[in-house]
Amino acid sequence: MNVVFKEWLPDVSPLGNPGLIECQNALPLDGTYKSFQPLTGSGTAAPSSVYGGIWSSSPLTGVYFATLTNLYRQITNQSALSAATYNTDADGYWRFIQYESLMIATNYADLPQAHTVGAAGNFSNLSTSGTTPAAQHVGVIGQFVMLGNLKDSGGTARPYTVQWSSIDQPRNWPTPGSDTAIASQSGEQVLNPAWGDVMGIWGNDQFGVIAQQGGLTRATYVGGTTVFQFDEFESGRGCLFPNSPIQIGNLTYYISPAGFCVTDGVTVKNIGANKVDNYFRSQVNFIYKPKVRGAADFQKELLYWAFCSSTSGSSVADQLIIYNWQEDRWSRATNSSDGIISARHSITAGESPRPIQGWQASRTLGSFSGTPGTAVFESGEVELNEGGFSHVTGVKPLVDQASVTVAVGYRNDQATAASYTSDTSPTSRTGYADFRNSARYHRTRVTVTGTIGSMQGVEFNAQPEGSV
Image (cartoon, rainbow, N blue to C red):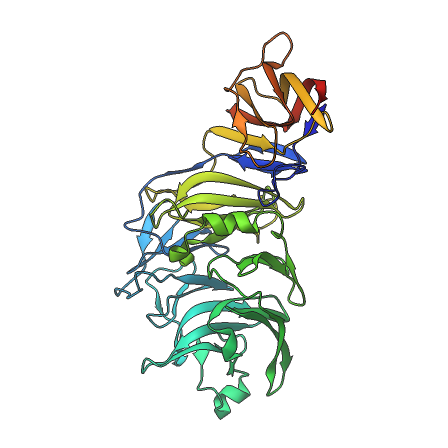
């Protein structure tokens, strides 16, 4: 009997699980599973923990990132781009966005900062005309820069308010409601206060999505004195982790109180329901919400979310949950990182998409290109002899890697935890790992070390052994 390793479904009970109970240190690719390569970095380490970053596009490619007190750009070497010391809260974070050639950064504690990509000099206040409030979040919708979760100069918090620049003038921030603001289509909007803080802003040419803790609002450009029309379209599935959203074209993937979701600005779909949502809730450390960071690998069409596990007791992310957005399949990996950022999606002719960038726990910058380690696959539980016992004499792993072992999990009823045989290597003659195990229910745990080109499943060699 062949058992194909389908999608990883840790939220589904083992018996009759059509996929995998465990899928660790592997990638769901091309309808099968391939090697996960750990994060590896080199060069000069970031001077302290990374609190946000972005991959910049033209006119100069590179990585911008932030610590609590400084802003940096890294192309080959790091360049400090802070004339002053910033005041980011210890449990805070920076958000970055690029508007044409202007890199913009917000941290809520200080006024929004800006730097012309490729230019010399340091970051400076975003507004050169008018004044911006301090803001936690920033996004681009069409020809506007929009700020959300605001704090006025007097220290008054406006967590559910957004404010946007003059049209195609990201440095021009006239007083909302003034004649200058109306003439240049700048303004502000108070969103539903019952939904709480603004947790993210993402947009395209004509509309954007503003995420609050308790829901989503679509901001559609209509022009004139109205500028934006604001429509609430999702109540409940707001954004729980502020650094989790990942935008792929007109779609944005994020983590809501209901689990992993995707929205097109009109509807919301749960992509983790009855699959990985319960697993993630049981594993993530909610003390470190800002450390849950999402990034996209446009080469492999994978999304990564790095997070701190509930058992680590550290603010350095030690786990990854991974999603193939084309195949709708998941996996996970154990890997420490001080932050990850998306690959660059906007590319020039003849250029390939870039891999995800990230900082190791040692804070050196690199990509997920290290030497594959050990992957673990645990199949769902099957009753090989329906209504009776089976005697398993062998299990053949269907994988193109010789460094592999197999263990058989077994039990006779659903009230008893499964026991496992010792890990056994397949014999070179038959390809089977040999066992002598009799039970009603069986599962397999396959451990593979090294590069995996294709992990497909296992083949049982078993005989019926009567009924009880």
